[in-house]
Image (cartoon, rainbow, N blue to C red):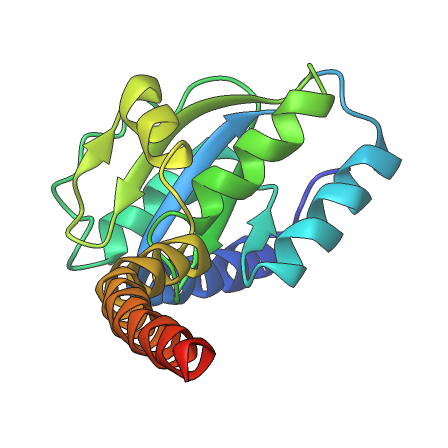
Length: 175
């Protein structure tokens, strides 16, 4: 069923606004996925703060040309049947959501990406982003790095107290 020109215009405006606020946009080929699979993907993406859009590449190109950030971006990577994952909060979340979903659904394959500066990312760079740790994992690693010296100091102080206690116990036994 064809989309009316008014609907296309409003869709392009919505996409342009979404792209302007996006920190990262990732495109993935989704041939072979069922409607139920796409609904599962949308549910997982929503939980991670990522928006999934299934739009014709031509409309995405038009929306990108209307954006100051993406006006000069190379759109040659936008080929095939693509869905787009967009996040305004996290730079790597769209790639991670799509990559984790692709592990269990072979019909989904990462294709391209666009960062907040308007640079086009090929499949290998998007895959590299998907393999980065999440913000929560990085925070946990940072906390453990900060806590490690403190636990070492506690161990040293505890050892000194233990040796004083052993000396006092030995002295008490001799009396």
